[in-house]
Amino acid sequence: MEEGAACIADMKRLTPTGDPARPVEFQADSQPPPAPGEALIRVEAFSVNRGETFLLEDPALGLRPGKDVAGLVVQAAADGSGPPAGARVVGHPPAAGWAEYAAVPTHSLVALQESVGAVAAAGLPLAGITALRLLRAAGAVAGRRLLLTGASGGVGHYFTELAAGAGAEITAVTATPERGARLAELGAAHVVHDLADAAGPFDVVLESTGGAALPAALARLRPEGTLIWFGQASRQSATLDFFSFFDGPQNARLRHFHYARAPYGADLETLVRLVAAGRLHPEIGRVADWSDAAAVIVDLRERRIRGKAVLTIGGSR
Ligand SMILES: NC(=O)c1ccc[n+]([C@@H]2O[C@H](COP(=O)([O-])OP(=O)(O)OC[C@H]3O[C@@H](n4cnc5c(N)ncnc54)[C@H](OP(=O)(O)O)[C@@H]3O)[C@@H](O)[C@H]2O)c1
Image (tube, rainbow, N blue to C red; front, top):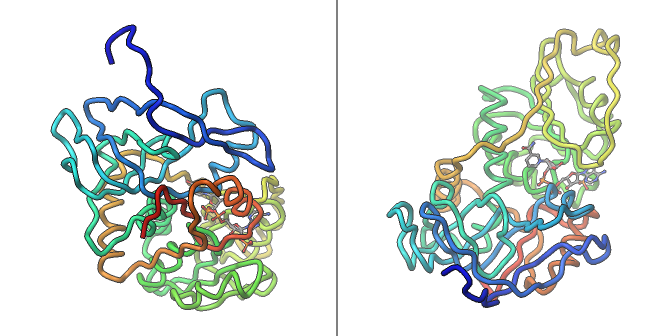
């Protein structure tokens, strides 16, 4: 845009309100001008992640949430990288994806096969890439016993199917049988609703709920096992006791895990390929028009959605 030119509001985006009961609202905005290595996407569907609900609790000034988008390239990247105009794509921009148009770096944007719809695609990026990278962090899992807490969410469903497919014996922890039903179909060997019922010892524990669950899960680790600590959904910090390790997980490793390291294109491509091949089944617990975004975000936050929550713009399959 030329210097001094008027900024024309030609699209809508969702913007944080700071109100926990209605955490987002529509705002008129102008289409984002893509940088040379970015394509402009007309967004058809996007998903919501728990980490984004945390950011909405006390939103930073200018926060524009949205890291998971699927849609159509309306303007290819000026540097010639990435999919051409007209391509159906899924992408993982750093932010600002809850909008009619989003600028997405081509290193984190991949074309979709015809068989992969926008809703399934939008559910893939953050949770799917996290699951894939968690599996790599867990190492060689074939024949190993894994314990996964917070398993009924977006990451949990992807991780369960990927790890079971790689030969792991997974025990998944969910709040209720209903929230764990799909995990058994995706390959979980056991689904329990109380950590006390998780029959260890486990080679690897993947913990993302925090509070009392972290030491309880750790206690089920075998000596010299690994606990991968990747979240704190409860928002409660955990207390660990050095001496409790002698009751089981002596010499255990505790690994902090954060998925974020661009580029994401290669991992996104893997996820899309697995979905197209029928080897990965996005569990989309809620699909709604983005006019219902505030209610959907509250439901995700309050554990009323299983798997991923996807919002569509203008109706999408
Ligand atoms: N480190 C990273 O790089 C990274 C990346 C992505 C996500 N994460 C974190 O990993 C976790 C899973 O992510 P996600 O996208 O799958 O989230 P999600 O879809 O919201 O799932 C989280 C699950 O945690 C369970 N949970 C247990 N206790 C909870 C509590 N007190 N409050 C809320 N939820 C509770 C819920 O299952 P039940 O209701 O069945 O118990 C819920 O389904 C989150 O903590 C997220 O912040 C970390």
